[in-house]
Image (cartoon, helix red, strand yellow):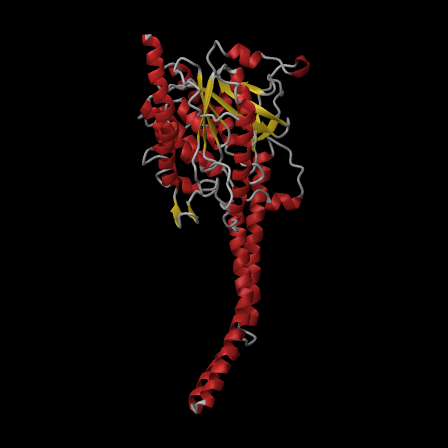
Amino acid sequence: MITPNSPDRLYSTRLRTALVLAGSGTAGAYHAGVLRALHEAGVRIDLVAGRGMGAISAMFAAIDGGARLWEPSGIWKSGAAQRLYEWRRSLRIAVVALLAAGAVLLFPLLLLAVAVLVGLAGFVLTLVGATDLAGAVTGGFAARLGSWFSPGGLPLVVPRLVLLAVLVSAIAVTARLAGQVTRRRSRRRMTRGLLWRLIGHPLTSTQTVELFAAQLWSLIRGAAPLQRPRNLELGRKYVELLADNLGQPGFRELLVVVHDLDARQDLVAAFLRDQHRPRFFGRLLGAGTTRAGEALDLAGIAREHAIDVMSAALTLPVATEPHLVTFASEGPWRGETHRLCDRPGALTRVFEELASAGAEQVIVLAAAPRVAWPHELSAGRADVRGHAGEQLAAFETAGLRDVLEQFAGRFAGLYLIRPDHNPVGPLDFSGVYDERSDRRYTIPELVDRGYEDAYRQFIDPVVGASGERIQSVTTT
């Protein structure tokens, strides 16, 4: 395979350039650093595309809002990212209550263990001749233990505390079930079993969606003290801002891919210039069918789904609850409500759609480090977030390799920006301890690493060299 950053490939500002942002979770921090470097260097970008957290970075980059991602008060450097993908509140309450019940049950056993130790201490004191002291210690503790285990003591209190903790846990999961039914009653029928309804998805993306939606609204409203509208209206205002300013510096066309669980296919949402829309949305699929059911034209009636697409891109499969989207009654889905989420393997689809959108050269940003070499194994993660993040990062790294192999030669230029080493997993929003460097690796540091890699891997060797060649060709 030809290396994407091979010097034989000539970068040109005259070609239609697409920027692809790939990755989930903390990959957005790496995107932020790279976007800052590309902004400073004045790299021309016509179209931004992505999936997962890359779709969110693309939505900010499309309206010249990348600074909200990389600046000190932005999402990735201010500490706000630590609130992303929190454990579901009802699950946290239920787990804490059950742990409290377990601690209460173990308390009598702990007292018995202490009694054994006190007895041993009394025996030792007797051996050394301190008989009076031994009697005082053992006798006093025996009297206290007797009072604790009297009928009105621990035998009465422990069962009540355990019952209270179990009731709190039951109320927490029941409240979750009631909330699910209330939210879904008018949108989507539930057919899952009772156990899954009670336990369900361990993480929530609600706060994550709210954080990014609030930042988008602050970009749209500017300095005006306006109240944030509902998501449908926010989506319209986002598209209006993009449509009114497309062609101005910092504003680009947009392409996002999410997955429709009910249609069992990817859903492509795009805002393109008029000259590219007919070919992109009008091309036929197999058996002469159209793309009406899988392509959302954000420049048209689908503009109200812009925030829905953002919410779906932030929905981790299995780990978080799918995002529900009700399509227009006059559309191909006749008012149906579908479940949408991210698909880690959708990067291939992003590249296919870029070709249909007329992209001629592609810059890829990926937080996934290079494929591991021998003697680079590290200890596996035992925590739930770390273990899930390990698998997700491995899948994305392998998928990136397949995409680069498959699309090598399909574009006039294919350039890759990625870290040589990145110990931060997709769900490590509070940072992580790095075994290889024996220190803690933070999210702000990942932003800075993206900034440095952009200059070292692309801006200096590719854009700089290409500018000299272009000038030389023009002169001659």
